[in-house]
Amino acid sequence: MEPVNLLREHEKWANRVCSTLLSIFAICAIPVFFVLQNVPWRWRIILAVVGLITGCFFVYFGKNEQTSQYTKYVTAIFLNAFGFLMTITMGEGNRSVPFYFFSILAFCLIYLQPGVILIAFIGTLLSHGIMMSFFPEQIFALHQPAMYIYAGFIYLLYALAIHTIAQKARQLLNDFKRREEEERKIKEELLKIQNQIANTAARLHSTSQELANGASNLMAAFHETASAIEQMTQMVDVETLEVTKVANTVTEINAIADHIKKNV
Image (tube, rainbow, N blue to C red):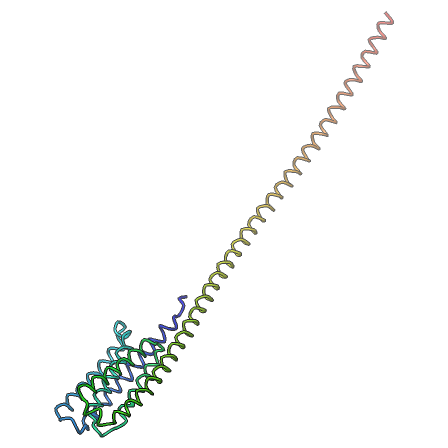
């Protein structure tokens, strides 16, 4: 049985969750685009169509095995792009838009990968750098520069905390994976030893059977040899008896011959 890679399975699960949520997020943003006050109707329609295409794109992107592995990077980029659009189009209508960027790091934490957190962090810095350079009226219409300095300091601490959490969680998962791999290797070694013991026991049983059969054959041969020796002993006794009879007969004949000689 092939061992389950928990990190890979978790990433697949996170890809499915993110692709589903982002597709819903993109489709639900369509009504928001239509109510933007500072954007011409032509751009509202374009943004709505882009939102619909983006939602369908994430549905396909998440189900395709070859592209789903890049979902984590697309997630960080897409969320920053959406915040960028909202900041330059909302005007003074919604002062909470800049704080949306804080939620990007928390959302990307689902992958438990410091690299994804770093991409989201860099994306936020780049998007704000572009907005302050090319869209200063839009971004500073929401808050004063002093507020962005304060929020930037808080965001830095927040990013460090999220990155540390992701790094520590990843380390714990790697340790768990390594221990699971070590346990799997130990189980395989124990299984090999168990199989070797079973094979050795089978060979010992076969050898003992062969030795028992050999001992039985030796006992049978011993009994046959003893029986043959007994028969030979009986034959020797018979031959000895016959020789004794012949010797007695010869003795009698010699006695008769001596008696005849004396009478002559």
